[in-house]
Length: 384
Image (cartoon, rainbow, N blue to C red):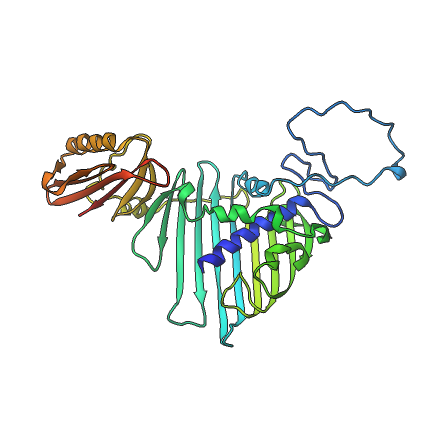
């Protein structure tokens, strides 16, 4: 089901890229600086234009049809969404049909998010379900992004995990790769539908599309697919405000590995734009990611430390200090906090150090070594 979540987010990026490119009628989606009218506006590149010989204005009837603007950067419209003060979104997937053995498939998920720009905070809740497997039940995953920290909790696992935002599960490089325009074909097949509509209070242009617009995204790893969808793009900002998509699949699907024949229904909607949206980290989340013995004070870390993951069971981070410098740092910092180093349980070898500390009835293990993938020093701290 994790793959389905990633594909859902990737599809949102893909549709956003299509929105930035415009539709069949040649009407480009406006950039953030564009006016909220239907007239296309030239997109500034930030550099002064070269001098040209400007011809005399043509008569209105003789004016050529404006040339569509160049393609926007694939992630530009997604970034525009985060320029809003706040919003909520809801994305739903429903997958129904049969698998290769002829057994029923009835599964899906819902992703709800809440976002606040200042101070930056985002909340995501993913609910997965499988109606054909009563034992599976429903699982949920919560992710809070507060500043540069992200906290995650799954209903089928114990405890909270803490990451940096860039290392959180919601920051996946594959999504950026899938947002590439190379996976899109036949953008000129998008149909402009009038009149425009208001979605979440925003004037939005309406487009319709089919499997031709989805191009190689559907063409690779898929059997026979037909699709119909509707897409709404904010006039002012160029971001997606809503879309719906229904795909009929025969012969297998990379979107749902168990589905051989059936239907995939997907929807996304933007809500409460610039409304009274609040994202607050639960009090237990921060406390639950503290190592035992450091509930009342932060675990000491070098100034440049970058946390990879933290929980009550372990903390892993990177630092630019050498192994020897990191060892010296912890011998001094933990001594100041009342921890005593246990020489009988500590050892040193080339490029690596294992240190054991005690305080009252608590024990702490710290392993310091060079991380082969980054060349930096990696520190792993855990209670014993």
